[in-house]
Length: 215
Image 1 (spheres, helix red, strand yellow):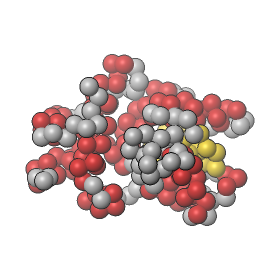
Image 2 (cartoon, rainbow, N blue to C red):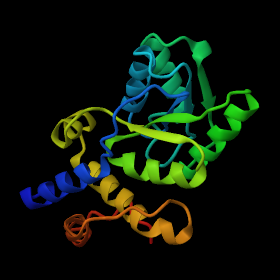
Image 3 (tube, one colour):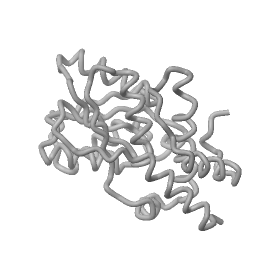
């Protein structure tokens, strides 16, 4: 049972993970693979609105997606975007990445091999992965401008679309842990984490939302 205090802490962390960037046209839209097909839908919408002339979907599978996306996250994303009206010719698929760093590294190489010079990325992720994706991109691809994007949706609305609030909280807690420890490992740039957000994180860890924590 999820308590109201746990839910309040989750909402606080949710708001911190969102970057609040103003959407602007970019060289390419990059949809980061995950269990959430909504990332593909947001990426397709941004393309159809003219905010990027090309899409890259990147991602293999993980323990969360291997059953629901057996052909790989990027391929399932591509299929969904085509269903929504994106021409298949405007989508590149990167099927091998298994973490955010690889998503960006492999996408960079894919675009280079395709002769595409990207000076800016419309980086599309799950809402609670915006900040970590941004911090990773700034480390892995420092010369490119990053505009973070995700579904314009509240915490409560997102939980309803996913149907598993505990999973959402676990994933948020895991994303924040990585923001806290990855700068020391040179995986991401440093991000200031307000004390209130740190305290909410610690309470949720103590309450047992730990399945996505690194040991």
